[in-house]
Length: 241
Image (cartoon, rainbow, N blue to C red; front, side, top):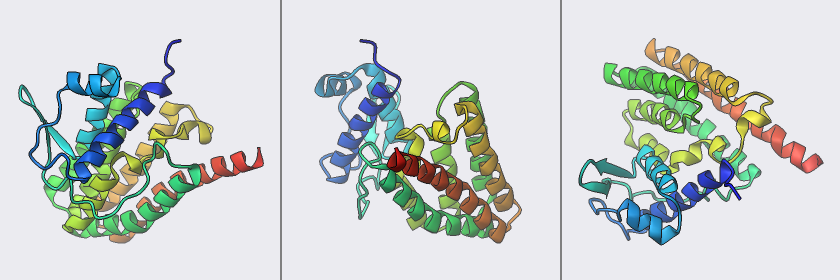
């Protein structure tokens, strides 16, 4: 039987959870070299494609870094997360909604602080993330890495490392579409849905770039609230079925 599109994604998420768990438990310490791609493939019984996707997600969450020709290493600070949230791969819709509520409370204020404190380098990094998002959508990709980079850069622009530490900890748990088909829940084609998401991103960026904290706070709240409402509708539909 040919694997469905979701099977490799679920397998990759399982690899991410296993490896990130070992990093946070200190089994792999900052500076340690991870097993090779071939070793991980054999250990987990998955394909190289799955391993590459998993490593890409770990890099996006800034838990590891790849040094070309040498290997993949655990980043400094990757083991410092002081709390844990159940992984999105096993979370229920109600738990995903709860994560979004946490994000609304934190990221709206982060956006406001970013509008007050951002520098030219932060704005340039946000712009690169948004442009990468658009390219990945055009290539029929889920754009999770670019999405993560955008939100992480906003957190970094607050000049308060705890915001960025939390975003790194959450990693791809930030994005319900790694667990569920958000576009389907929204009643839209995937490209249309992701284009709408990036328009919301652009409004956040515009407010931050002109140094408008109230507008940045409102734009971030609208963006995350839209995601929450889509999941709420999906959750209610399941309850009614």
